[in-house]
Length: 101
Image 1: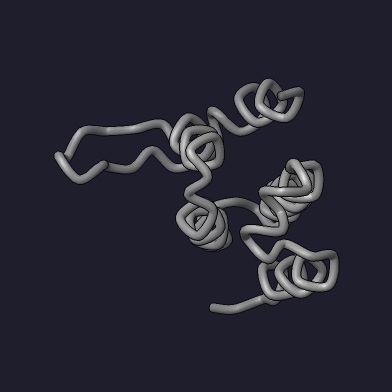
Image 2: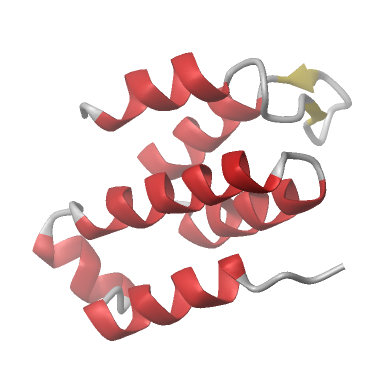
């Protein structure tokens, strides 16, 4: 997908490197790409949400915009299976952009 090169170039340096279950360090952008490609959407959404505390606000907003765009361009059958209707995506975007500390 055209979405991942942008994610990897823009966010590779910015997304938190975290540990997987085995304690190995993983790059946040690669982790997010893999979660989305494997359709682990809840995991991907919660990872993005965690970045609010780590990224400057404008970068976090860009990441949310990127995620919502990615979800919008998914195949119709995947969106239907996941319940990613437009109303849900708008609500998700609003939820992710709510300022919460």
